[in-house]
Amino acid sequence: MPGRARSLTVMTVVVVLMSAVALVGCGGGTSSPAPAASEAAASVAPGGAGGSGEALCTEILTTFDAMVAEVADAAKTKPAPAELTPALEAIYTDYTARMTDLNGRYRALKDADIAQFGACNTYLGNERGKHVLAKDNTLTEALKYYNLELGDAAMVALLSTRPVEVLEIAVKQD
Image (tube, rainbow, N blue to C red; front, side):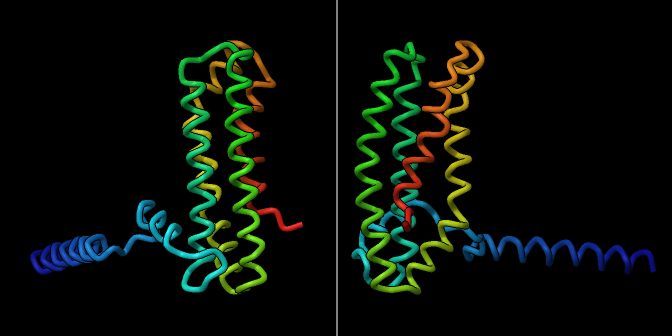
């Protein structure tokens, strides 16, 4: 019997591995690749049907990611707070206008297609935290420098809190 038990164990391991390979090969993962989502967002008209809720939310989160990348680039060389503050304010002003435009589309979606609006909110609920965490990871070095080395609480808030405040503009409902 020990030989038969070993054979069953080996067969079980092989079946599990083959299943895992099949799932990976067939796209059994739960997340979709960002480039395909970005293309979908660009191809769907605001307020239209056919996945427009998820596409709009993807566009909102992609815009947020782009803003974070610009903030990280501005802070990369660790300029003095007096130099960095106006650069960050300019970035936030630019992205506030973009998020305001996205908010108009977000509100229009609610009136045009409540199901897609719900899909947008579901997607946002599932994905927003990942993007905010990515922001924190992207800005870690800058935050450590301005917080631990300079002790500049205002700069830390500008780097950590302000991007999320700009993101919130896109999904305001009041």
